[in-house]
View 1 (cartoon, rainbow, N blue to C red):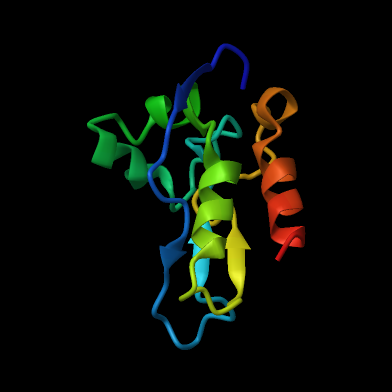
View 2 (cartoon, rainbow, N blue to C red; view 1 turned 90 degrees about the vertical axis):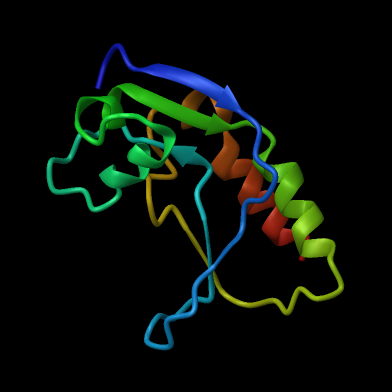
Length: 116
């Protein structure tokens, strides 16, 4: 969707633990918050409310790019307690949303994952 504002943010962590036995993965990560595709039925819209934003139009007009995501992921994967478990990428936002053309976060995250 044209005209969206992309705000660069820094994350402290990137991996999110999922404890749902029926899921084929134990971790998720999302390089972006919000999504320009503007799907009305998107289950991830309420995540913007945690930022004090609207889950409607602001979800597809205010995109947050976690610019340090690849570096943070590398640090998390280097921890001795990391067990090489499955990671799902983009469970709350499209990892190839239009901001990816500029930020290339998903590509860089995949490169980091290849190191491990």
